[in-house]
Length: 265
Image (cartoon, rainbow, N blue to C red):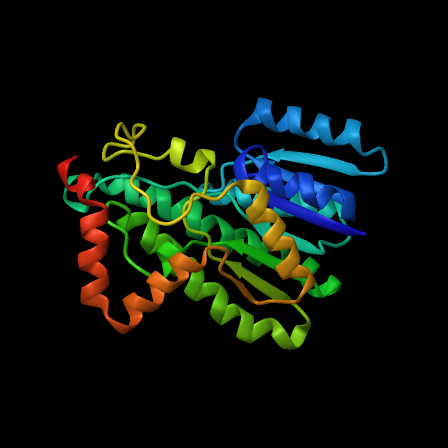
């Protein structure tokens, strides 16, 4: 039985991760920015699993001091962390030329800086347990998506950082699983930022199959059990990433046509 820390655990993919990890965990550490919902989720799991020790921390992962405080508290209260799931994230739907710089900064802080700082703070515990780091990245880290430049940049940075870290810590027994979903039916898109930092007002464009949090987490746990280092839940989107690598101009034409409505915003 493991001690598992999950960020963005109060809703969407994070909550589904908590639900499916609960039967195989000894301790769950839930982290989210939504205080009331997080407390509700903690109580739900405590009521359902009497053997499970559930703790929660309200943290804005874009705040470096808050992340440092979190790592200190977790280190004091938990002798080891077996699995760290960097799931929390935000996105935007807005064209580069119309987007305020603070929107790009916010996305980068939550999607890249926060996971990096949290991982660095918890590395001693992960080394001790020969633990696992699961990062919820995106296929947007592999290929451009119109109207998501900041999100693509943040996930690309996340990808490169942890793929490099993998090479540096593998010999210390730390395993890293990178997950590359495409379009999920979760609140991350419902809460997407617009060009001015307010909620995006237009409907999102998608490509490929819209997947549920449940089936995505099931695939993640299977990949974890199999010791995989990378997971591409949507094969059609993976094929699009291959097209981008081999024929980038053809991919960009197809993608721009599919996401043409973004140009009208």
